[in-house]
Length: 199
Image (spheres, rainbow, N blue to C red):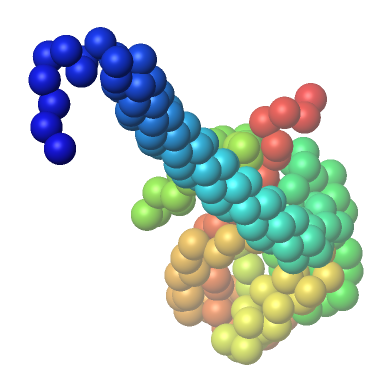
C-alpha cells in the first residue's frame, strides 16, 4: 500500500487526532511527573517535621525525668537552707548551741559580710547567684580529735553548707589553763545559692 499527497486530505483528521492524542499523553506524563516530585517533596517535609516532633517529644520527656530526679536534690538543698537568703542568725544560734555542748574548751568566731563566690575552676551556676559569708574561728583544743568532732557536729547539727578552707594548729601558750594543749585557727565560709528571679 502506498500513500500520495492526494491521500493526505482523507487522513488529515485522523492524523490530527493522533497528534493531539500524543500531545495530551506527553502533557499528562509531564503533569504526573510534576505531581510525583511535589508529592515526594511534601513527603520529605512531613518526615522532617515528624522527626523534629519526635526529637522535641524525646527532649521534653528527658527534661521531665531530669526535673523529677533533680527536684529531690533541690528540695533537700532548700530544707538545708543552702538555697535562699543568707542564714546568719541561724548560724550564730547554731554556733552558740555547739558552744554549750562543751565540744571544745573555747570557740571564738567572726562572720564577715556576704560576698559573691567564684568557684575554682569556674563553673556555670545557671540561674543561681553563688555567695559566701566568710567565717574565721579560733578554737582551743585538748587534742586533735576535738577539731574533727567539732566540724562533724557543725555539719550534722547546723543548717547550711560550711566550706572549710584551712586550719592551722599550734601548741597552746603554757599560761593557758583548763588543760588546753592546742590552738586552731580555721577559715572558711557559709555557702548559699539564690535564684536570681526571686526577690
